[in-house]
Image (cartoon, rainbow, N blue to C red):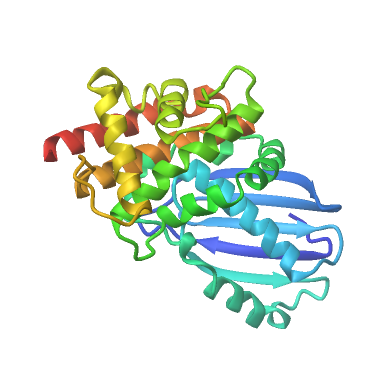
Length: 302
């Protein structure tokens, strides 16, 4: 990749072994009136190279890197540690920017450090090498803007930030509503029933609609079991945390919280795949394998 005006290069390591490959995806992309050329290359480590056609602010390169890294998170199910990062311009002198680059990556929010649940290889659903990343990134920029705080909250719940597991699952259950509303906006065939004069969207109705439409393979055991009891437990758990009071109603226990954090992360990522136009054949089999593994783990420890 030939440098034009500026370049940001990061090297990621896999703390769960080697990445594998060699995989390569080299593409061009226009964002905020700047032309970018991006190369993602993976073998033992992963290298992300972002070049621009003109001199831009450091913040613009960081914004593009974050957009790419978050899209890769949707594919991989996790973030990877950054071993090294540097920025150069036409003078090709990385020391000019190094303190700012180090400061940026050293002080990023904790969302970029993934929880153990996400680090299993089975949580990887899509290989970036198989994707038209130029188009996927264009769609992801639009979708991430629509998801806004809902996606940020998803990342916080899937990070290793110190938060009780029942608080994390409560937030992830609540996310069904904004994710469902965005699917309604982008999919004419999907509609969640509203109730009452105020056309209210209830959490239980949203959960049922989202799972029955987008998560039948993920929640097959729950659907084929006592689905109403399952929905009640999910809503009760969310209410227990959001209302900050003890409930006598049945709620998820610690193991169930971890189990459904994993399952909800799968359905939300699948919904993002649909929103950005990823071919079902690229991830459906991997979702089934991941669900089978999680079901086996849960029912063995139940």
